[in-house]
Length: 195
Image 1 (tube, rainbow, N blue to C red):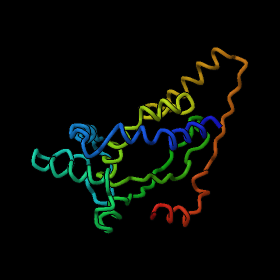
Image 2 (image 1 turned 90 degrees about the vertical axis):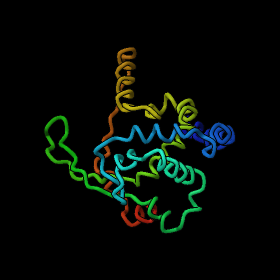
Image 3 (image 1 turned 30 degrees about the vertical axis):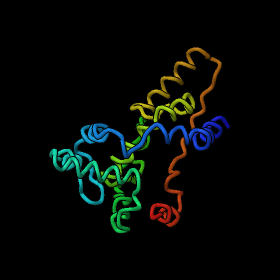
Image 4 (image 1 turned 90 degrees about the horizontal axis):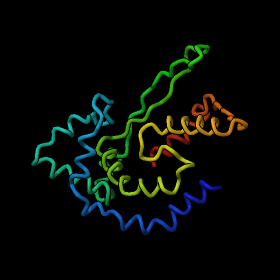
């Protein structure tokens, strides 16, 4: 209930405040270029084959065009042609072999699909999310620890260990929803991805 209330507060009452904090039409170019500079190297490209290194090689002249395209993606993507919009929304789906568990009892845990989005859309999304990440974190912490931070999972484990150290009578219940992803109807998932 607390999470639902926090999300409703974010989605309803706070949307006006969030809209006025950041305007992608006037936001500094440095914000976009700092995201571009921090793109991880060696990651799989999206469907177009565009890699981080390609985007990072932008010269001063091509940076202007890149920033213009990213602003358009963040403000009015519908102004792009339908074919380009579909291309920018597309992703590659790659199989990832899950390693065995820590106990060594299970050697192979199957395949997990990994979605690799198109690079330009990913940059525009990260840029837009920067505007709201502090407010979202403020609303959802301590219920959600992985907002806009690296190592959110580790933080939650440290919080659990600290709680158990202070409250030894507490109990932790671990649920492993084995293979939950593979129970999703693939036809329904494809329809959602295509939207």
